[in-house]
Amino acid sequence: MTLIRTPEALREARTTLGLTADALARIVRVEDGRTVRRWEAGEREIPGPVIVILETTMGYLDSIKQIDQQLEMLRSGKMTSGETTPAGRIDQTAADIERLTASRKSLVEALEILTRQPADDSSDRVHWYTLQRTTPLFSPPQKDEWTIPCELSPEAALAYFAKHEGFGEGLEIADDDGPLTEFVLKKREVVRRQVGASQRLSAGQLVETYAVRRRSR
Image (cartoon, rainbow, N blue to C red; front, side, top):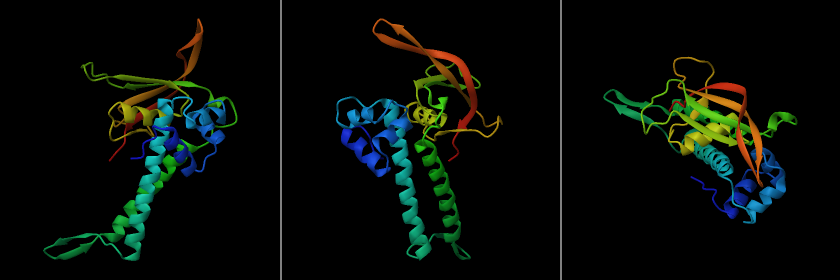
């Protein structure tokens, strides 16, 4: 796993992704590239949500590269797959190529989601995301609600919860509210309140709700 915990690692990841400082700033919803350059110079600490986005993105990129290597070996005949049965060996190379190709497509789509540029309208405002179980467990130490107030897309918010709250298999927005939907993700406006010299944030009006389930293995 590629860790993005130092200014040098941040700069290398941005370069690998082919992003300018301004482009990365738009993705992580900060004012402009000057903030990114301050992170890369070590003048400011890299925010946790930014680390999650970049580590998740680099993880997708690393997985795509690994799949490309496996596909190249399978297609060239340098590597085959299958199993030996009493009736003889069953070649599963074609099935594995199909499976890896589908996995690669999913990873590319996820990578595009995390690195897409925000629309040139009010949709890039800060939002407050809350993940809740549809059926609370009420059983400590099990949690039923998780919150992150930040400028992230729903998909990136789910990536944050999956990484930091123990959802090892990952979380994804469901296509419908079927029986496999275990959570609901609520996107709310952020209310800013000035308290002395600092600002305090709280959840405001509900903007949108998403059905969420654990990612299938």
